[in-house]
Each structure stands twice: as C-alpha cells, then as structure tokens.
Length: 399
Image 1 (tube, rainbow, N blue to C red):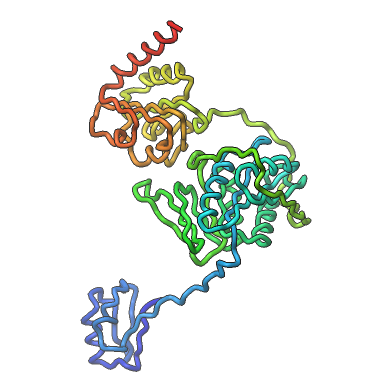
Image 2: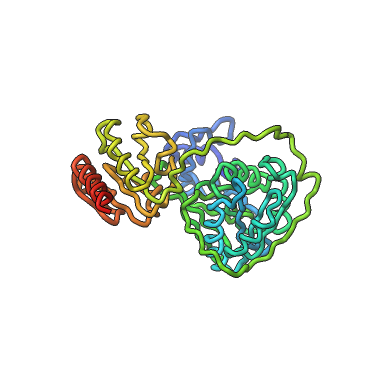
C-alpha cells in the first residue's frame, strides 16, 4: 500500500501546490515528474488537500480469507511428563471445553508418545470428545522432528480451528515449529482466552513488561495457535464417566525420520518448583538485606511452604531465579500466599493473583498489593513476622 503519483495529471503548477502542502518536504519535481522520498510519513495530506486525482492512496490488497467452516474443534496438545499427564494439559482441557461450548465445537486432544493408550483413556474423563493418539517407539523420547511431523499430520487431517499448548519446555519448543509449518501465527504465554461467535480466538497476553494487555486475533489464518502457562486456568473435576473416544492414528516412516539420535538419558535432579506449592511466603523490596530473609524462610518452613520473591530480590542474587513470581518468573496458584514487603506491581500480581487466599503485609497503606489481597496488614514486616512466627511456634507447642 502507499501513495500513487499520477504524473499524467501533474504539471509544474500542480506540482508546486503539492510540494507546498507536504509538511515533511517529501515531494520533489524534476524533469517533469513528481516523486516521493523517504521523508514521507504517509499523512495523506497531499491526497486529501491536493488537486483531485493527482495523488491517490492505494490500500493493501485484501488478504484471502480462510474458509472457517472447514476448520472445526478446539484442540489441546496433551503432554506426558515423567510418565504422567502434565497438569497443564488438564487445565487446558477445561478451558478448551469452555471455549468449544460457546461455539458448539468439539474438544480434541492430540497425544504423542509410546504406550500411551492408558493416558488417552484417562483424558476422556476430563471433557475431551476425541483423543487422537500417535503411539510409536519413535515417540518414546521427545525429538522435535518426529513430534512435529505427527502434529502436522493431525492438523492436515482433522483441521482443528484452535490449538492450545502448555508453555512447558516441550510446548515452547514444539508449538512454534508446528505453527511455522502450518503458516500460522503463535501467541505465547496467554493469560486470557475468549472465543468469538465466528470462531476467532481472542488471545490476550501481557505486553511491554505487563503494562498493557494485548488482544491478538488472527481472523485470516487457521489453525489458531497459543501457549498458556501452568496454573493460569483451573483443571476440571475428573468425571467418573468417560465422555470421549480414543482414535489411533496411522504412523508413517516420514514421522519416524529424525536427524537426532538419543544415545542415553540422564535424569536431572528434581528441582523445587514453587508452581506446585500450596503455601508460599513471598518477599519483596521491604527486606533491607539478604540476611533478613531468614525470618521469612523460617515462616515458610513452619507453614510447610516455599520461599519466593519478586524480581528485584532475584536480580540482587538473594534468591534463585526459580523462586521468582511474576511475568518473567513463575506463575503460582497456591492455597495461600503471604506477601511480605511487596508493593504489588502489575508484573508480580499477574503471576499470583489466582491464589485462593492472599495475605499482604506492608507499611505503606497505599501499596497496590492491598488492591488484590484478601487480608491486608499495614505495618512493619520486622515487627509483624517475628510475632507471627512466635504465635505459630506457640500453637504447635500446645498441640
């Protein structure tokens, strides 16, 4: 799209008028022809105020629209981790059911692995209408080429309208590769998903450091891809009745082909994941020095919980990055989170606002954390936390 100069309608006097109109000095008249240079800001004043027909604006050609009626269903990539169904899969199945019901579409699951038929049957208890299974020795370990080939085969044959993938290590590696092969876009780390009546998926995610929430829609592309972090949505309650059907998919030699060979697998030591904690004690800028975190750590231990922190504490080296809560850290959904000396920035709040109970302690009465907490204490953490620790110890001693 851009300016179209019709030199057959332009003489010296018309050119002079157009040059005078342009505030950016982007027009020049030489050898009987008017031209535009890089200074043009596309303000269109020359089109609107210049002699009629001398310069016109040509919009970008309309993109071919996809036939949305050919694409049906909300699909979830069902991940198996350490021989178990990853919890994010169940959360996404619950959300997929909600989205699909709003447009009368089915819920699909795609499961890739080896000896996974029992997992497929189990997923049918969580609202999936059909689970499409690619079961083969080639999928025993995650290798990007075989998994991508199987995923793409599923899309070509079933044509799901929307695809939800967990933002795990596997999901973040696989989803972009499959989306690129389909010529589709991908919205990462969505926090809100909505469905329009025309089956367009509204994908909402934080942008510019969490200062705005971007709404992304891809009306001219199918399938619609997005990834979602663990603990963003709630998992549905398991139904005693299996509501779905397991469909075994054919495996081809092309799917088995890979340029990567796994020679051995070394188990990585299990690390603490605060995303799974039921109780979290989170620390912020209110702590004056690293040594003071010991009282927060003691409180967390007494409650059987985990210690976490905000980005400034992680950047200062006081806590491991794996203990950071927020957009650039972990998303958590504990039964209770105690926020100590935390102001409550948008970035932090986005990572923990799904907690069942939020307790905040801050000496600043106008701190943003008090806008989202369920219980707020205005006071000094150096006075309140030691008292709380003593109360808990006293209670345990009397049991």
